[in-house]
Length: 264
Image (cartoon, rainbow, N blue to C red; front, top):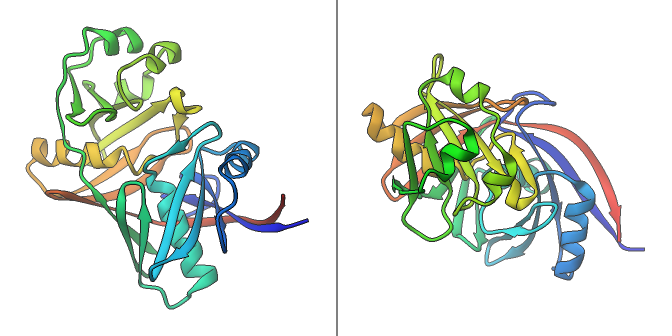
């Protein structure tokens, strides 16, 4: 029976049981898509990442328990960590080829930095759907201009973000790739949470891809390019982000949790 190595790590965390858990499976060649999806469903984590060598880097794909997604930040960070720790210990930079184009991750000691395409949000008329999902009107609703971008709702305070209890059925029906809620932070520049029930993830612990929407918004609002951020889910996660115009840099640590083998 063929075996696949699996690593589970916690991304955007400096210790186990924090940040966002991701499973990472290095492959020599692609398995059938149905098998990849079945593995992700069995893992039952927000994301399982698979990669194979390609053109001096790696082709990277991400699966939630129910669907393949075009971009995932924390599982990209986790994949770079696995390569640096288990495949190429001299690695300082890796390029992933993905459905969202080339994604570069650099390493400086314990810090890994994602270089992702910015998804700049603009004001969006949602017809009151976000307020209905949240049970209270947000200060603003924004969304990237491209089809399928994440909705962004700005709340009055960090306390309001922490206290939010959205109606998941209504969030699932929103016209976008889930819902980010955010506010200016008390100890960091901004805080956020992200809900994606349409992808089988009621609330994601820490979401790198949400920060390509959040970073340009808060960089403009606060008048600074480099910002500190915290995603205030139950597990929580710390990030440092930088607005570079068409690109967003997202930095954090990774904590190992387990290693194992999958039999398929």
